[in-house]
Amino acid sequence: MRKEYLIYKLSDEVKNSCKIPREAFTKYGVKRGLRNEDGTGVLVGLTNIGNVVGYERNDDGSLRPCPGRLYYRGYELDDLVSPLLKEKRFGFEEIAYLLLSGNLPDEEELTAFRELINENMPLDHRTIVHIIDLEGSNIMNILARCVLEMYTFDPNPDDISRDNLMRQSIELIAKFPTIIAYAYNIYRHSMQGSSLNIRHPRENMTIAENFLYMLKDEDFTELDARMLDLLLIIQAEHGGGNNSTFTVRVTSSTRTDTYSSIAAGIGSLKGPLHGGANIKAINMFHHLKEQISDWTNIDEIDTYLNRMLNKEAYDKTGLVYGIGHAVYTMSDPRAVELKKLAGELAKEKGMVKEYNFLKLIEQEGVKCVSAFRKTTKPICANLDFYSGFIYEMIGLPQEIYTPIFAMARIVGWTAHRIEELNFEGRRIIRPAYKNILEQKSYVPIKDR
Ligand SMILES: CC(=O)SCCNC(=O)CCNC(=O)[C@H](O)C(C)(C)COP(=O)(O)OP(=O)(O)OC[C@H]1O[C@@H](n2cnc3c(N)ncnc32)[C@H](O)[C@@H]1OP(=O)(O)O
Ligand SMILES: O=C([O-])CC(=O)C(=O)O
Image (cartoon, rainbow, N blue to C red; front, side, top):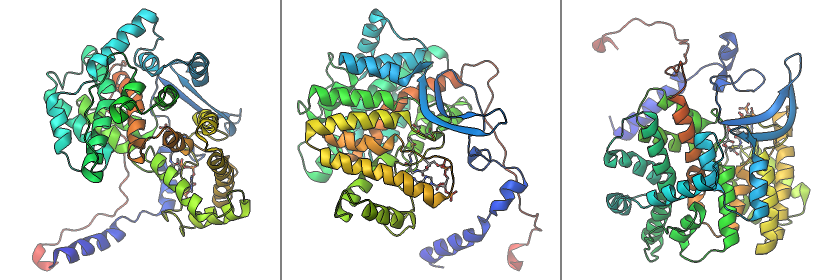
């Protein structure tokens, strides 16, 4: 039998063996996607880290949509971001300290923490050589491979004591920007023939500045760096239930090593329904810019969005990227923040026409997806809707949009890993699947 035919045949058989009737989920009371009937997530854990609020409950238990709110260790996101914006200050390290420890640092603690991060930014020489050797154009994939390799260079990789977990967490937070910047520059060198620059991180720079410096030398402004810093803060944490953090918690609950668990989280975030949506959303925007002749014509926009929902246009998946969320209903507070930032930056960068078009896509996207789904539950733009547009305005290449999300979310992942391994009464996470296939009698190979 030819190999291609065998693969086709196996795949064809799977068409049947994968069939699980939709009604069976209701019949057996199975929470599809770990969701309750009303779409809310099944409660599977308790946390002291992030709090994602997308709805409130009425006395009768029904849902009441509300504007989205996000809290980091008890502090509302906007209360953390507003002073930084006002004071034109960098804050990602401060937020990382808060998320890891539970407390905002004082000045002395923050200075020491920044120094510790800076000390840990350079990569082991063997990792640099390894990135040069790694083939591939997907930086998330390269990031995951580098993380797995860090296990080899760690003198104590499997120790899950709290001190060791904290050391590993800080090293990962510090090294992600370096790995991503080097991996992209090497990719650009091999794919686009540009000169290869491996710039050593500088001691007196913040994570955002150092990342831009390693990526683009001096070719960035202070405003670009502060925008990136804010994006890192906004993407750093989102509770225990988002797919990548839950992946980190599930793997951590087996007491496996930090690198295995974080590599799994990277794999989850890469998916186009999760962090990978930021690349899909910016590509969708470029596609719409080309396909729609009048950027102010609502009918033309709606017609095209409906073609997308009918799987006739863009990537033919039926999705409008950057729209919808598992928890948020009326608004995603991060998208609200990013929309404001994007508007201000668009004025600076001469991109107001594009920004106005993007806002219209958001407005019509929400309307068209809601109508298509035929539900009354409000739907909103999510974090990934505006992030790519901001990255583009600060001159960042598309290939690193999801890796930058990982560079931010590594903070949340490590904080959750530490929590998962340190609460009293912790247990391996092990839900159940009901098997709905009838038992079969074995047939010897000669009789099949
Ligand atoms: C950082 C982040 O991860 S934010 C999310 C980034 N992802 C995206 O932007 C991708 C586009 N959005 C989506 O696919 C979804 O809204 C998700 C994955 C974010 C949330 O999914 P769910 O929690 O299942 O959404 P919800 O319960 O509100 O809606 C369910 C139905 O609406 C559809 N729907 C939801 N959002 C969209 C959308 N943007 N475009 C088209 N259909 C959509 C779902 O496919 C699903 O349809 P089905 O019942 O026929 O399978
Ligand atoms: O919470 C989610 O499902 C996805 C999300 O927005 C995030 O991880 O930031």
